Image (cartoon, rainbow, N blue to C red; front, top):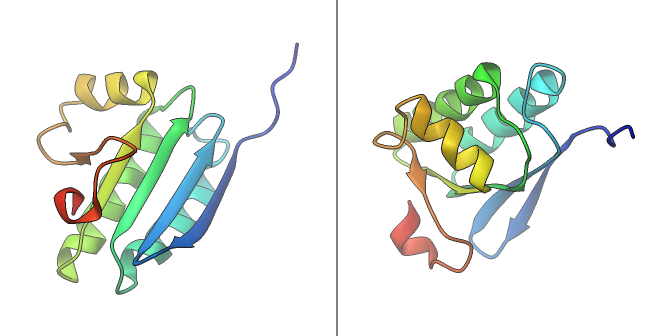
Length: 113
């Protein structure tokens, strides 16, 4: 059974920009992910990356998450990630859990970024 293609989109939710990733965050979706994530990270709003519907994150996906984190940090902002179990595992295995802010879905924005 084939899986639907991954999608990446930005949504304004209150004071935050949510970047929602559905499907795999891998090299196949990298151009769209880079475009959406880096644009959101460069804006003057806190960013939340919703990976709850993301089944797989490869090294290119981890790289773009970290890049977005660095872009936001340079402008004095932040990026928080609401991970799926598999995304959390990839972040932990890569050693990024100390760098990237992981947040639960219902956690208030002030605690996230």
